[in-house]
Length: 305
Image (tube, rainbow, N blue to C red; front, side, top):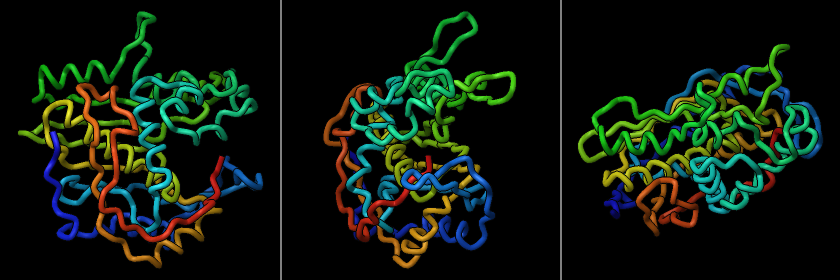
């Protein structure tokens, strides 16, 4: 199924990203962080707000690929990440096989050993195992994506098409537990709703780096919604996104100022160039951007690790 997107020139400009940047810069509170600058090793703090909500109509507005800076060079790595996790990827090697190459700084030998893991292992509490191999009481595992896909086919009217991203016993960190995940899942609590011939999706995110993480998250979950809609012969509808902790790291605040001096432009089309029958068969190569007219790239934005 190919979808009828509203023509680019008729799309309204979304200011939702700009508004969040402005809210954090002007009104956010500074909070200590365990993260350090990936280049210098200097300790970082976050400037953060609690609670943010966004709504995008994919066919009306285009996919929320930010235009305040050009992300055409890396958005596909984010798409690689999401489809790797749908398929249960747990290691940095597996993520690379899907075309996602940005996980290396978080799965060093030192970081993994601290959690009793081998170098390159994100851990059993990470996204892929949680989504595709959730531990069950009888010692087995449960593939949430497979079962929800089947439920949506058999009982589309249900309000329980939900994927969770949290295995507490692998994530809680205290004197009783050794954490079994290098990065606690930030995004990935997903709820689908079928209404008529349309598929809507909500994603709840506990923590979000608004400069580096959020643009990737919007791109990958837009692709996920489009792919999931196609596999159920539906139109992609509203992508609703809630963030609990929205923050900017102290080494990125200057880049927020740069983007706030740029006017947002209409979102592009994220088009499928190949289609599949099941969501786990999709790959980053199955999507391309059309009508993407962003402001220039901002190179070498530092990361917190």
